[in-house]
Image (cartoon, rainbow, N blue to C red; front, side, top):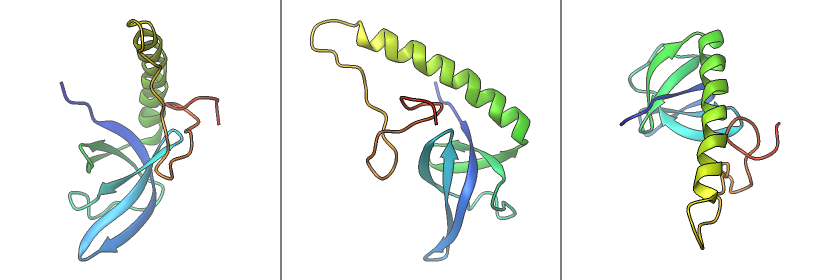
Length: 109
């Protein structure tokens, strides 16, 4: 199964002729290729799938989806933590290596 995640475009730049950007997924920030959405602007919400922004989405829908995914993330972390001896709860980190906060991180932002 493949999943596209909504996030907010917080940086746009040209990387050797390829439009790239940083996208905030409720506290976790990752790089995404913006080539499929040349009209995207700072502050827009996009759906990112395997590192590519593939469509724009309105803010209300994006925030609702992030809220649902955050709830699912808590269930998944709880499930993984109980899968047997030696199974540590996964750590979610931001792109700078620090523990993430917000929807998919630890403590709320």
